[in-house]
Amino acid sequence: MQKEDKQKVVADLTDRLKSSETLIVADYRGLTMPQIDDLRSELLKHGAKFTVVKNTLTRRAAEAAGADALLALLEGPTAIAFLDTDGDPVAVAKAIGATARETKVLAVRGGILDGRPITAEDIESLAKLPPLDQLRGQVLGAIAAPLYAIVGLFNAPLQNLVGLIDARIEQLGGEGAAPEEAPAPQVAEAEPTMEISAEPAEEATASEAAEKEESDG
Image (tube, rainbow, N blue to C red):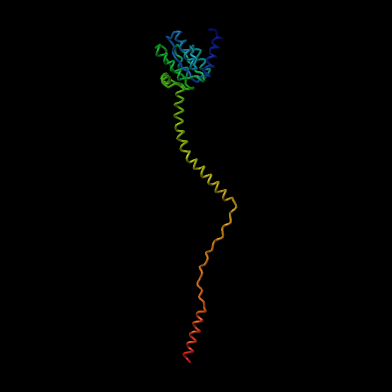
């Protein structure tokens, strides 16, 4: 390979490493070209490009891209599955795992998931997860359930608060209005008192005087 070609390969690998936050590294030793092509076609369906690389050039690219975690995985014949931004890491792990079981020669070494190093055991666990769409639904369901409970807890206090605010507004509106004239206090009418006429007393006195005069005469 000419120097210019090597530089182009390194530049291309560097760009891929910078743009791919997720990749899976495997030892493809023993795979036939038809098997590699089949795996490459399957991975393309899930947003990944399966590339056979030279370790010497890949090390240079990894150093240039700052992908130090990749350096420890570059031992022996190496192939890398570079995932696009919208690639499905679960489906890619499943496809590579299926090929490894069928061929019994493909060996997963490890990789990088969202910028973090992962082992071959991590990739095997990843392959056992449900499909990405189903996994997203399960995660959303787990998040949404507590949110419904939180909304229920806050719903009643909020309704009570709104009621208190409405009552206070109505009260303040009543205080701002002109006060109505208070009705004049009603005084209870005094019960009529019995008047004692003085005339009967005078009549009694005159009768007594007449009787006295008769007795004197």
